[in-house]
Amino acid sequence: METLAREVSPFRRFDRDEWSKLRADTPMTLTQIDLDELRGLNDKIDLREVETIYLPLSRLLNLYVAATQKLFRATNNFLHSEDRKVPYVIGIAGSVAVGKSTTARILRRLLSRWPNHPKVELVTTDGFLLPNAVLEREGLMARKGFPESFDLPSILRFMSDIKAGTPKVTAPLYSHLTYDVLPGETVTIDQPDILIVEGINVLQTGRPPRDGRGIPNVSDFFDFSIYIDAEIADLTDWYIDRFFSLRDGAFKNPKSYFHRYASYSDAQARETATRIWETINLVNLRENVLPTRPRADLVLRKGADHAVRSVFLRKL
Image 1: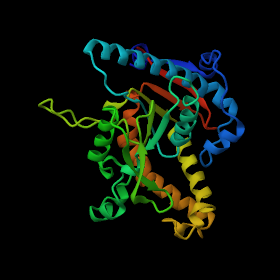
Image 2 (image 1 turned 45 degrees about the vertical axis):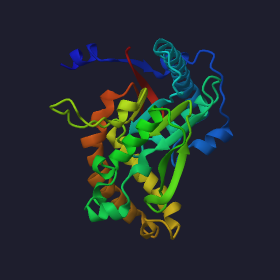
Image 3 (image 1 turned 120 degrees about the vertical axis):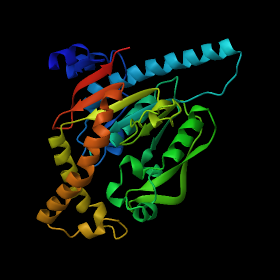
Image 4 (image 1 turned 135 degrees about the vertical axis):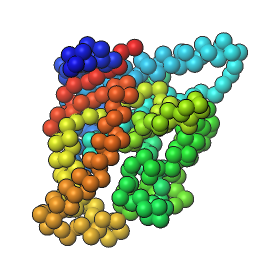
């Protein structure tokens, strides 16, 4: 059965060397200063990783965007229409601590330096989480990050407006310091060439309706989707390492929602991080996030050192 699964896989697999060669003559447009700015907490990505993995990916996406722009012009010509420019939407999914935010920021910077799509925006779905007060009232604080903790109608309205070419669409903002949505604070997305949407559950699907009239999924609005993958043992280590870094950094801020953890000993911090990971994030990963991996157009498979070991690209 395993052999059959490999034979009928909808993905083509590339190792690092094979993928790196697909960079062709794509120029390196990031500096070490850029990378230091974009890199997330405890993420060990370096310029070599950008050259090997992300430059070929930016080249592929540039080709896809150009093809879509050409198709859009052809469709307008067929319909005798002058519709507004519609952003090319890229979704990025994966577990907590896998490096989604770093990947999203690097791709945004690389893609914005291609001449045919200079305006690239980034939105995270954290802002669409229900406020803590609502989660507490509904008994969902321990399920934060699970599908039911998000304001799905708001996400769908946002994505629908983006894909309609609506100017100045707003999305709510989230604070990782206060661990809550920021009341009244938004980011405005104004008809970009490309929009990157990053979030743990963005490839999530609902149960198929019996009457064919189901609510759309967030991923229905994506033109391309990326899943960042890693072994659960590595994700566990990365989450615990990040918890220690936050304990020694952001948690020391009295305004931090997790300020109480700042004084924890190493043993207490490890026990707490392990408990949170195993009872919340790992459960969400197994039940909701990992099952969406086959829906991605491209999977980046990381090794224990955070470097991408293989790339899986969906066959056309």
